[in-house]
Length: 248
Ligand SMILES: NC(=O)c1ccc[n+]([C@@H]2O[C@H](COP(=O)([O-])OP(=O)(O)OC[C@H]3O[C@@H](n4cnc5c(N)ncnc54)[C@H](OP(=O)(O)O)[C@@H]3O)[C@@H](O)[C@H]2O)c1
Image 1 (tube, protein in one colour):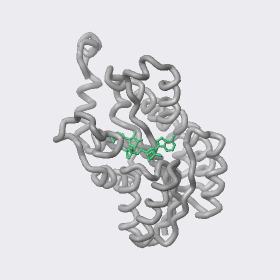
Image 2 (spheres, rainbow, N blue to C red):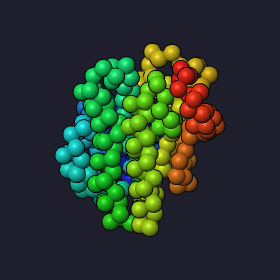
Image 3 (cartoon, helix red, strand yellow):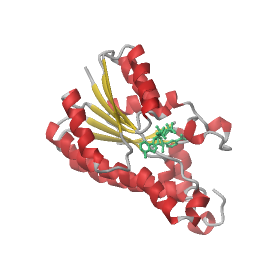
Image 4 (tube, rainbow, N blue to C red):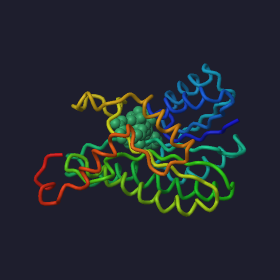
């Protein structure tokens, strides 16, 4: 039996991942956390219809950080132990609006960066005590370099990625693994209506496949799909004098 805690459980990528975990192990139990109660109930029903023996839901806005510890306590009370955690919540900020509005910028940084870090602080202590388990955190290829089109989002994801690097090394000696997932363009509500290059956009199920395999193999970092590793390698190595003149 595997027990999963999923934060941002109503995200398209999280739903696809939970379905895949369940498909691979019908005894999977889930503790699902999200802020939209209606979507959360739909997700619970979806997993139950697919055969999940136990699905518990918990409504929480991740920016209500005082709730994190209470939520984790409830999760442990319900599941008794946590084998795998997936942190999947996020928003795609309007970069131009962030450039004009400090409140929006702070809110977006809080959702995509601080809330994840704060959550990981309490979660890490819990997993350390357990002495086993795997944490999967969805970052983004945007974390690899600050581009003019989305550098607030990129900065928040980079903060999470760097924090996770240190945390991974800390948790290693406690038999707890940490996998960072860096998706490229994914066809989800987050990217709806954006003018993305069609050939490079993948379905959430494809990312789910990468997450499930990567967590099982205790990978440190996964680019999803794999070709983003090479794209970002090139983007990271563009010299500053040229990079600042480019529209990326
Ligand atoms: N789609 C892409 O191209 C792409 C690329 C790279 C990385 N990612 C990352 O992948 C992850 C999953 O995103 P997705 O593409 O699956 O998008 P999605 O379907 O739009 O899911 C985003 C989820 O985050 C939740 N969320 C946002 N703010 C929250 C808050 N304050 N408290 C609690 N939940 C909150 C949303 O809940 P509500 O329904 O309540 O709003 C929603 O369930 C995110 O971390 C995203 O940054 C996505």
